[in-house]
Image (cartoon, rainbow, N blue to C red):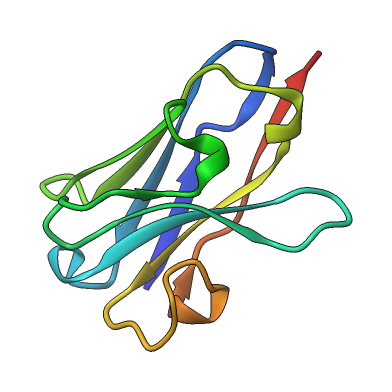
Length: 124
């Protein structure tokens, strides 16, 4: 299984970025996909997730109204549209996939597969 995250970069406060997570090696339509982020010196934290069907997107409070997660099953890709970015959004963003859950989705241990990070830097 491979998850390839991309789309990170440098953006000013208030700007937007769209991250992509391309998956291969798994039955994508049977997998939930999530985004996490990790800032320097901090633990990895949950950002958003979306279920197999594309229904029930779930967001952590501090990105609600600003970030939107979506998926294109035909392209085996999940997107994270990030608007109104703030300096505190600066982090490496990771996508993850799960075909089953035994932990809360906000727990890193819940996810079986991980991609490499893509760095998002928001300047003030």
